[in-house]
Image 1: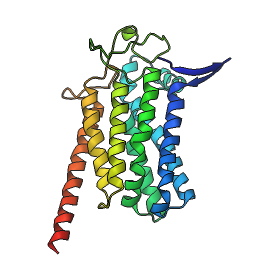
Image 2 (image 1 turned 90 degrees about the vertical axis):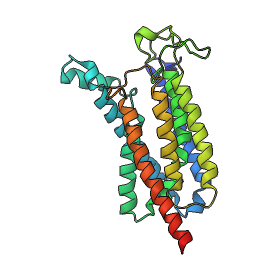
Image 3 (image 1 turned 135 degrees about the vertical axis):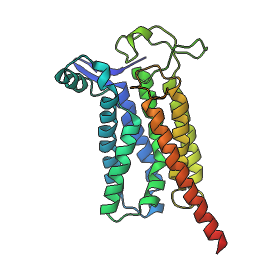
Image 4 (image 1 turned 120 degrees about the horizontal axis):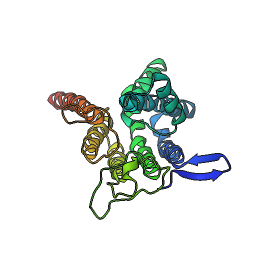
Length: 265
């Protein structure tokens, strides 16, 4: 589509980077509207946003390198490192960023003696909103594209600078980036209304991980880019989605038990 949003001389503004930054800005704006209800001060909030951004970028890039490392064989280790450095602005795996961001934020909240579950319920609502913008950036860049399709909504990438596999340039493919952008927007709306009602701590987080892991597991079947080494016919992202779904099921069980104990009193 349009991997480069703006070019002035040697300066290039990548569409993916622009949409990702816009996603963080919109998600932050949304959360700021409800910040007062949490009792959190703005300095702490912006620290959380900054930590989330940095840890997510590092984690998503590291997981991308991990799953893509063998794809560059028989290149030497030095050549692989040079390749990833030169192409740093492209190639991120969302789950890597999610995992590192969760761990980093948990440590930060522990150090600051902030309520982990309540803060997580608040922050998680903005995630699918920002993620939706990021997936539009993927669509513009051509990364995370789908498999060839004969469906009427198949999209054709023709820009040679797009991140689409070379053999798929000019071929109609599933717009998997837009599938996920739309899915994230629906999840955001669901979490928005869920979070506005009285709820037990952890409910919003569990709702998010359940919805997203299911959506991502399904969309992976339509992805046409390199997905890493498959195990039992499943991509690394699908295996992570299953693992998260199992943990979410355990979390739902805990919440259900707490509800039963509350009514039994």
